[in-house]
Amino acid sequence: MWRGGAGAPRSRPRPPRPPVGHRRPLGHAAAARAESIIEIGTGVGVSGLWMLQTVRGAMLTSIDTENEYQQQAREHFADAGIAPARVRLIAGRASEVLPRLG
Image 1 (tube, rainbow, N blue to C red):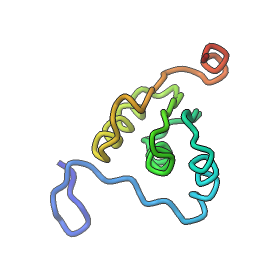
Image 2 (image 1 turned 45 degrees about the vertical axis):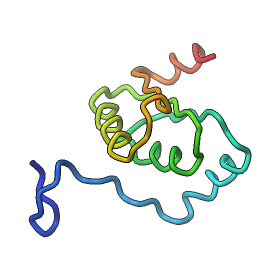
Image 3 (image 1 turned 90 degrees about the vertical axis):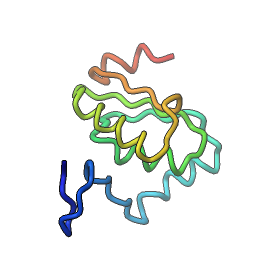
Image 4 (image 1 turned 120 degrees about the vertical axis):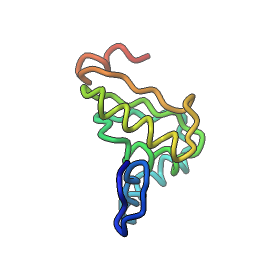
């Protein structure tokens, strides 16, 4: 079990909150009522979580070569209450995956 800053037990660290400026481009996607978002590089899900929380109802497709990162991202999305149906994580190289998306 991971121990938080003051020694309080927690299951895992939470993703950091986004700086204010990072939400501006997402505001355009939200205003346009984007239905799909493609992210290259899942990381542990921080940016994907920001996008899913900002563009309500959108579906996120995130591509990464690291399965471990995608599993951590999946856990962060679940912890944040994001429905699994809103997230599609694809393992692979973006240069190979993007041409096959339709």
